Image (cartoon, rainbow, N blue to C red; front, side, top):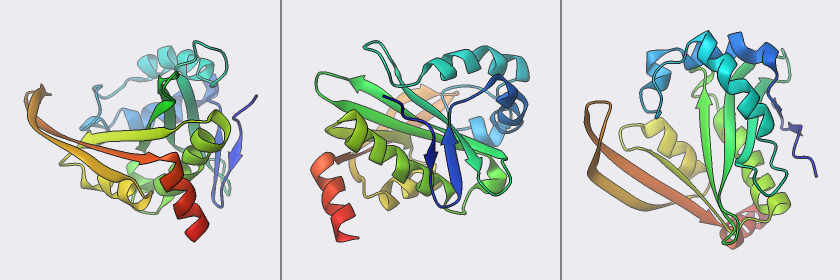
Length: 187
């Protein structure tokens, strides 16, 4: 089974390639992009180290961590971000999504468009029952995407961990397969 490439109205979600390192480091190296991520701004060398892992994340095999996509504009071929579907608990059919977009392409609906396609893969092809997402409560752009996707807020953890030197507040969102199918049918 292959989960690549996914075509949306404006995007192509495809497998990463070694040639994507510079474009990826250009946005993942920005402090404002890394601000709410578990990692610090990434250098070109660090991205080059990670790309083989991302390429291996193709969703196949019992030990696959998930599916990692490069988000590319169909019109220009420019890599504008990356999105992921992680397999949290295969037996319970649980997954988690994540996304990182270049600042110049934020606020234009690209993340929502990409994640709608990733949710479809998770529910229709992988057979997941529940897909969740997490973000820092201060990252309003991220939780707004989750709400646009039809995900519901399940938790707000207040001052639960020190994150990058300060108390963090984390939001957890999720959507069940039947909720997702009902929303698609309504649209």
